[in-house]
Figure 1: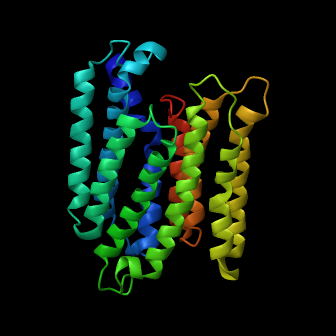
Figure 2: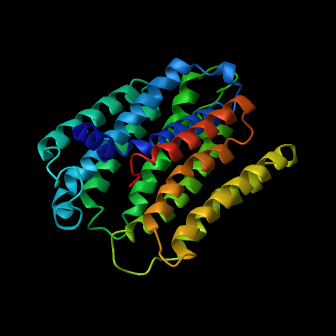
Figure 3: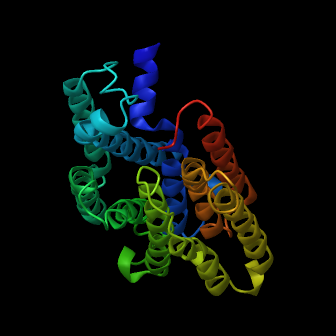
Length: 304
């Protein structure tokens, strides 16, 4: 049981729902939020499986790369505690990343090129994040690429149909996906800077909180009167959740940055839901389910 829990902790599996929601959001944007009966769920499942492999592999390699630091500061982690060998973690991590990359690259074209870029960006982050003060930009770049990969994947799959009549980056869907990816980049970067203060004895910076409202600002700007009510409702839900998470750090006598970061990580699903606010109710329910799953999973497996 200790070994099984170590596997779950190393993979930060409680964050997988946010990876799947990124894939679904990007896919819907790439299809311009088509009906659920137009989605090829098998093909989407392959994309989600590939993204999961890259994420889980990246998390395993993160602990492998940080083993030297954990032995000094976090001896309860799976590797320094002796529950699992460091060599085993390297093998599992590399295998998962290679498998995930291979699955996504089956689509070819721009999707494969961006998947290769994501693969390398994950490696750069893992090997350098303890030494780089701006490493949150790297992890945010990974989420940005995941949105674009999912949108490109869907657009390529439906190429030549009414859902994708133009090349991806020349289409309206490509532009929308790019803007959505950029605001998610800001949200995750802000989250990353808060997370860095979790293990550093220093005051928690307030300025990253400004980045959390970027998704709300974009949604209000790009959604017209037809979808204004849905946008405002989703924006209110996301805003209230962000405030609830920040309370654990900034409005309490005993700040708990880890709890704030965990909540904001689950909130990525709400950011995706806001971006796909024009999606059919059945698909919106999928996002809500993923959000609930992310919150529930954090009760057993820490998000960080």
